[in-house]
Image (cartoon, rainbow, N blue to C red; front, side):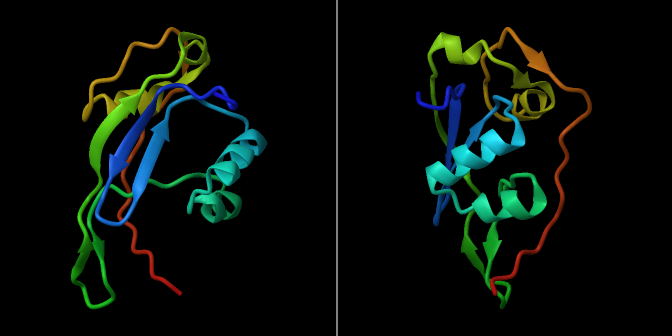
Length: 123
């Protein structure tokens, strides 16, 4: 409520809980929100100026599966006034192929969302 987030879509895997909110924010405000949430993605946001969402399995250095892919749990509905803010059209289009999303009155953005295969090694 404090940050005026739109609907929040929760995902759970064996090792973590992840959330997706389609409302768009200026970068500095997003940094404050992510820091306040205690998200493990905060360092990535500061370094790369974007957020990441794991969609596949997590593997150990030996190649063994350590966690399955995130699975959709539920949507936490926001007050209608929060859903009246701008929502990312590319992200809405992408996610609507996987889960049912509400129709939002104000969407913006062009282009698409794409998946990138990434290997992240623990230091």
